[in-house]
Length: 504
Image (cartoon, rainbow, N blue to C red; front, top):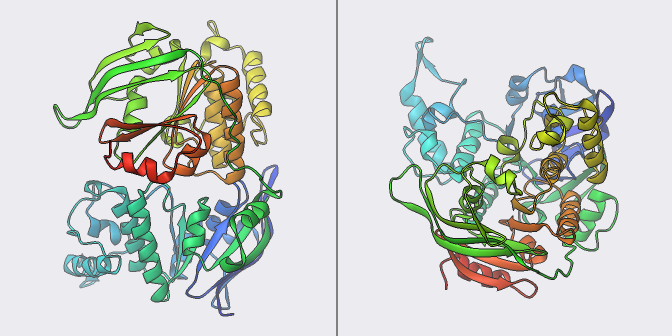
């Protein structure tokens, strides 16, 4: 085989932890190579080594590009060797134009002193054609959707003549149509000879797009094989080291009394006067059930739960009842007082304080439990240890910065924060986004345990198998309205999509 990239014997240590242990990773020229593993398996560390974020002096092992050994001191060295990374959190500067973003830090000059804007605009336009994006290169990036911004990141890499594109969870924030468009573009780039390393927890995508798969587990290479020789069960078994017999460990729940009622709920778009994002939404949640909310991007799912929680800026009207008593929620503090918790869609932006340690993130929403005037450190440690043990949060210590945990363990910290408030109702907005299959199953089991204790769970998910697999009842939203209600169990994806696209 003609390997364009070879990583041999890569070993990387952090204080108290070996992130990579003699990892070997080989990628063929012109292939789409999937890199998979649980959160904490070492994928991100390997990518940071290949991209020069971690300099060659900080790890053991060798990297070869087209058979020649390379030592990267920084990101620029890696880019000059033809490697470019497109991260899950996009790195574009929203206030700059498309063309400015594409050539930022790499501007062509004329007369050795002046930026050649004509060349930038012309080349940017030509590059956009390669990814089938027909937009004016002078438009600001902030005017584009997430899917289009993802394509700008790819174009930015192509402008540097990248021969190896590394895509880290590229579809995490994309709609189904945007995901399919990205797949088509990656197939086109493969035909042009561009090599892609594709990292994703969505195994369905791996089987759609990849030629070969490498699995990492606990910092070690478990194996590499062609996609045609694998199936989902085999990959999952390699990832977690055991067979997961049930991806959705659903339990039979018996719904009891109505706990939450929302009647004629309307929410205005804060950016457009008088335009409704939610239009007369009415529903109820019962004790002892998991209520799923499905719908396409823009259907109003997130706006619904964040508005009920008091965290959405748009003006709202309508009635909220808790156990038959009308309540007013004007802020998250009000919601917490009434026993409502919200695990947000974006855990890094809204769910965690990344530069704070695990213990302080856990106790953040329940300060009254650990303080009267001053924080009782013994109580803080007690609760921190309790939830680290109960939720099996993998962390070197309670003092570890939450930013240093894997995505799955970060999500468990967010859950722990809300469980400490002892909620009656828990909203989960995309609770398993960006985490591996093993961590997903653990979170599903936590959900089941909460329901057994009488907690009402409302789960939003873009993954229809997850909604079907875990919900007792499903509400489907379209354009700010509830268009369908389905009982869990024998629901099909086609039924959900019928209502999600406006069917009634």
